[in-house]
Image 1 (cartoon, rainbow, N blue to C red):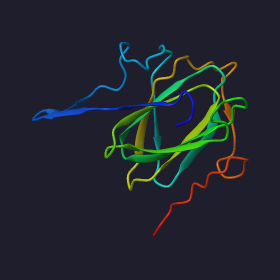
Image 2 (cartoon, one colour):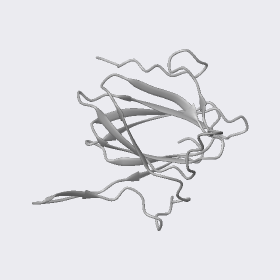
Image 3 (spheres, rainbow, N blue to C red):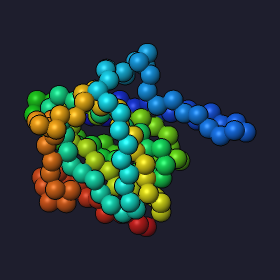
Image 4 (cartoon, one colour):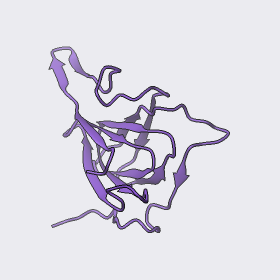
Length: 151
């Protein structure tokens, strides 16, 4: 696992009325602070990558559909420098992934339906000076291929 990355299995509690799933609590061991909460969606086959933050930690969960999430440690000096992690998140694997500052991350929707992703970053988005660096998802120095692997 990349240094500083943490995961939390999310427990779904169903009953005759529907479902409940806690995503992040301030008394969780991995809770670092609250900046904001936002939701984003990704259409089937679409890649949303790569980006990283210098200050912000992200806490990402997929609530509907499925995503293949990839992380790349581009932090020189990190004990896991150049390591890649991959996770499948969503309805079939309810999990929160905590992405520390400095780690590139992104995902691809691998379900037939749109994926709904929630992020609870530790910092609010700064529209004037965004804490965000982006790379093209396919043309970069990260040794990761977003293609579906059949077979």
